[in-house]
Image 1 (cartoon, one colour):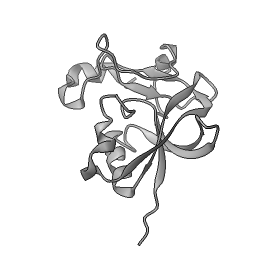
Image 2: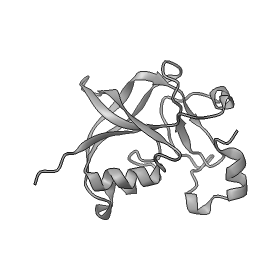
Image 3: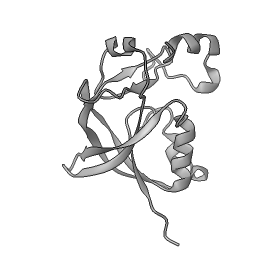
Length: 156
């Protein structure tokens, strides 16, 4: 039986060289294959939402930048693992968006975004590309302080 692959656009910690890229390369998580670099055809606000250097793509289409990232084809098992990482549908949502590849091809890809967020998130600097850095390092969920995270995250 042939399995249908889904295209997923990653713009944050899942990109190559970023802290969660191992999710896409761990064989036990399922199949993934890099297709291309690309950018959203629609502008979105991409912000760093917490002191843990977590990127949030806010569902405010037309505001912000065309977001740069990578396109992967994934099987159902990997798609489910990505949903777990992104805490879909409790935290992030996902939807199909048109992505323009670096070869100027248009592909419909799933991307994860935040639909419900406090307005103050829109006052943060808008990025076009996410990069982890030693100056503001990403923290794995397992090492975050829950008391601080509750104050920093998307709670109102």
